[in-house]
Image 1 (cartoon, one colour):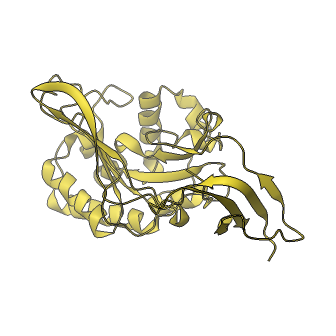
Image 2 (cartoon, helix red, strand yellow; image 1 turned 90 degrees about the vertical axis):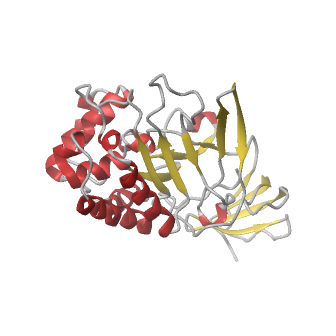
Image 3 (spheres, one colour; image 1 turned 120 degrees about the vertical axis):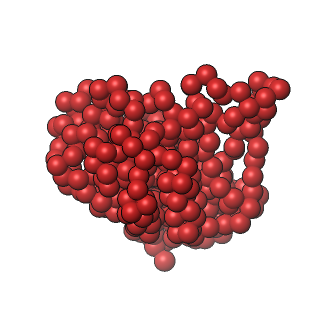
Length: 306
């Protein structure tokens, strides 16, 4: 069988926990079609590429959500060997968003990333409203793997409007948020991010929507992520940068309880930092456990190696 591309002589880490090995990787239709230990003969129509250089790396905390609209390569990450980026961090994502409320999310990203608002407005109005539609908008037009989280602030604003910046959600509003988060997970979101950190502010210096969420709301959304079999929950707690960090975890990102599975387009392993009140030192607490169901990687291009 002839393939579109055969990458020969690479060092392959397949994400199953097996020992890395030297081998070849075949690509057909933009997807990995075969992995072998240098045993497959070259077909007459194969395009062969010799594997050189280092492995592809994961950028585990980015806000490329907006930049990908005008820069499909996610520069400068890809110039430094990054092949996969995690987006939707800190409760920020560009979906869901109501058509008449896009200016708010644009301002939120402009404030968070110090991007001129006018640069984002060049791409407005966005052609999506739901998170599944946002994922669809990335397909086939970007040059980097994207693992996308849905942002709590975007979900909250979508459901509550301006009230998302003023109060806790009602049980009915929380239920509506759960439905949206579950739909995002079903469409391929890797998980949910949230933040109650006081230093994260909107365009006019106001707290972001997820800052006003109570524990019951955050827990309900976390349970939705688990119920849908997604792998990722990222939280910036209120103790981050408010002067009360002693004995707390100032940032928590859990690519939880499963191994990396590149062949299925998932990333699900992370180090959870821990701290104690008696020590200022940080140490990684690596956790390993059961595997999860696959998520969609936007562009559906799987890296040949990690």
